[in-house]
Image: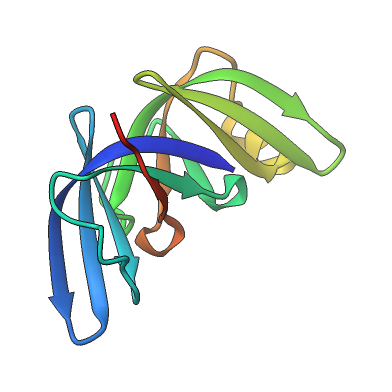
Length: 133
C-alpha cells in the first residue's frame, strides 16, 4: 500500500456520489466515493492510500487517457520476481510502490532512473485518515 499526503481542494456531490479533488504539491488528484466522513472538508489535509497493484505505469507517454490521476515519477528500484515486479517510484517527496507483471517491465524496457508516468483511477484512491499538523 502506498500513501500520499494531500489537501482537499474541492468536493462535488450528486445524489450519493462524491468527487473529491486534492492538491499534492503542484498536482491535482481526484477520488470518487459513495460515502464521505463528515470531517472531510475543503482545506483538510489527509492521507490517501493506493494499493500497489492499482498503479499503472507508462514510459514515454504522450497522449490522452481516461485516468484522472497522472503523476510524473522517477524509478528508484525494480525488484523482479518470476511473474511480478515491484517498482519503487519517487514523486516529489513521496515514495510509491507499483506492482505489475515482469513481462510489462521487460516490454517497456524499464530501468532505474527512468522518468515515467504513474496512473491511478479515481475509484482506487481512498482517504485513510485526517492529518493533524
